[in-house]
Each structure stands twice: as C-alpha cells, then as structure tokens.
Length: 348
Image (cartoon, rainbow, N blue to C red; front, side):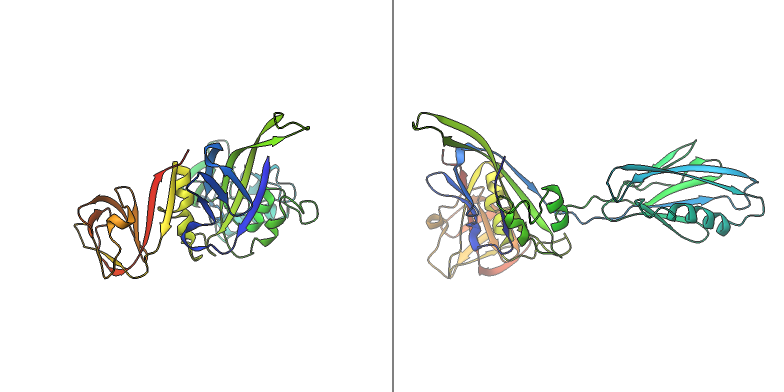
C-alpha cells in the first residue's frame, strides 16, 4: 500500500532529505518515518530518455508482377492495446521503388490510431510513435523487432527489413510517472497530491521504500496490526536523462549518497568541513588533507568511506596518517574543500 508520496524539486545539502539518525529512525523526505530495521526494500529507478524505434523496409528494384504482403505489430495509441496491420500491395516489373514505397506508406498512414508512421521515398521508413517504442515487422520468411538494431533481414520474397535505431522505453517523465501511478488531480487529491509538483520538461529518479508499520485498533495497545507500506520519492534529475543537474542530487543518489547507502544496507552521514581541503595525487590515488584542523582521525574516517572534491569522488581504501590516505580515484584532484561521507552499518 502506498503510504506517502513526495516530490523533491530541490534537494537539501548533505542528504538530510532521506537519512537515518543515530537511533535508527529513517526520515523519508518528511512524509514518513520508520525504524530502519523495518525497511524491507529500497528500489531506485533512474530516468531513461525514450527513443522511437526505426525499421527500414527495402525491396528489389524491378520486382516481378505480383502481390506482396507483410505485417506490422504495434499498438493502438488510444487504448495502448496491441494492434496489428497487414500491408498488402501489388507491383509490376515496371513499378519503381518509389511507387512501391508510395503504396506502402499510404496503407500505414491511413490509420492515425496506429503506433507506427511511415515516411521515405525509395524505401519505407517505419518509426514508432512516442510512448510506443516497440513494434515488429514480419513476413513469411522472417521478422525484425524495433528494440534491437539488426542487419537487413529478408521477411518475405524480395523484401527486407532492418532496424537502424533501437527503440527505448522511456522512464521518469512527469507524464510517465503520473500514468504509472494512475494519478489524477481530481481523484488522487490526498495520497498522491504531491505528484502535481512534478515539473514538465524534467526527468525524475523514482525511489520506492518498502517498510513495515504498526497500527493499533480497538481500545488496547495489544491489538497491533502490521502493515506493509510504501513511500515513493521523486527526485528531480535533469532535462535530458543524462547527467543530474539538480543541486545536491548526488548527496542522495550518488555513489556516496544516503539513499544509495540505505539500499546497500548502510547508514551514510555526510559532512562538509569548512576550511580543511583535500587533494588527490594522480596515479597513486593518495589523499592529502591540508589547511585546517580536520584530520582523518577527527572525521572517524575508515576504508569504505568517501571523499568528494567538487565533482571528483574517491572511496577511501586506507588511512595512513592523520592527513594521509589512499582511495579509488587515480586522477589528479586539486586541493579544495570537500564533503565526507561516512558509511556505517545500519543501527539496529
């Protein structure tokens, strides 16, 4: 059962939006709390930009007179249900490739509800509609699916099909997420109301936290009821599903982030020393702290923790002194203030 939904269009520094305190209480973006030992699963669904699949139909020029047929399996744009089209056309030995293409394109495009459109000149270029990246073109001799690129495949005599651009099912847009959860501003005004804050033009990472809750019925506290709950948090990513641009996004969902740690079974606590700097030496991965009072000892740093210098992230592999250690980053990072992420076993 979905207990609560939260949209984070901005992210608080140091991962405090989703964090575990020292007593083992998990704060879920301010809309729910739970004992962390009651968390059963953490799913992180990163956004994916949709890509329309493209299959090109080609045929031998000067095809002998005859009737040719192949099928396209797609979807109804109105209902989302599977929908098939049989393309049948007649050609003569003198029929040019362009005239054949004209016949096929006219047949396909006559159905405006079909999830495939046809363009082209001497060949037919079939492209899936946005939101319906998958379709199949097949005939008596073979078939081609739009979700994987292929070389030319003979689908029927004298006709080949080739997927040149693989379709990709999109994820993480406001429209996709609202459709997934059946959100409607009028009928979902309580539990799902925050979904109205999803911003058009952006992609979102979907975080789903499953946790057990205890409620009480009747007049006695001994009448306990265990419920399985979900808290869903949408964290704004960027406008192209490529690189997160939301400030502090990585504090939650980067390799060192609090949600990433929770999914892995750890409690991440982030801090940002004000004056001490950190640098990484190229090739060796050596980490050096300087210009302040903070040391690896005062941080309580150990192997498995993270140092974040601007966009450079290194996972500590060893501490060799108060201000010296080693990490996984082996490219140079100039001395600058940094974030420290302590990863520890969850307090149970």
